[in-house]
Length: 279
Image 1 (spheres, rainbow, N blue to C red):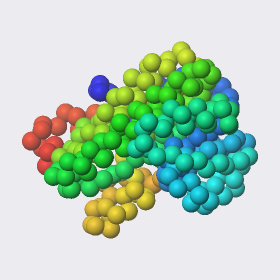
Image 2: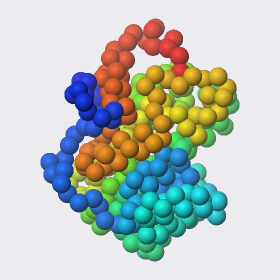
Image 3: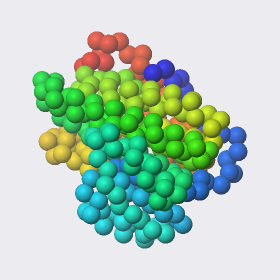
């Protein structure tokens, strides 16, 4: 993954730093179905809530019959219909067929939100190889397994946007969460390369890099005494930032904005200092 130099956002800009604008910001958003891979993801559903008006939404998750609260939230936000389908991120052999079924039954995908993942237990993963591999499988290999056929299907339509959630944890991997962080480093690199491969195809990829998110995924960590990192954000703040970036047809967004210049500096810290930083 290459270095990304930058500077602080101009005074008065929103908390999200949005990079690489496409020339025409007045283009109508992509038409088509909104699909959330990880249909009970707090961030994924919050983002779909901001983008679903007048669209069909498909929530893809395990135990789809349990998604009625998310379904009602999206209907209230203006979705014309919300369909829940079975999706197992770790069952990679089923992903191409699922994407084929989605496009056949619900039409072209206009917005694909890839929002599944696990945080895992760092201490356990350092000695339990099965747990370390589970984190790597869900947070990296399964992402590739979804993104590859998804990009192929959307290329065929020559339209649509794929939204991928990386993390600042992958910009420079830390001792305190290196198993999870390394998967995000890999995903960030894969998504960046895929975005370049999609250039000119009519399909674009928006890569989101949030910092520490206070929400369901980190609730157990905080219950165990972990304090939120500086510049932490909520799921709603992440969703707001990514929705703005989508509508402005950007290709990357850091949330909040200050993380971009901060991590430019952090990459320069000597390793002896870096390894002692807390989570």
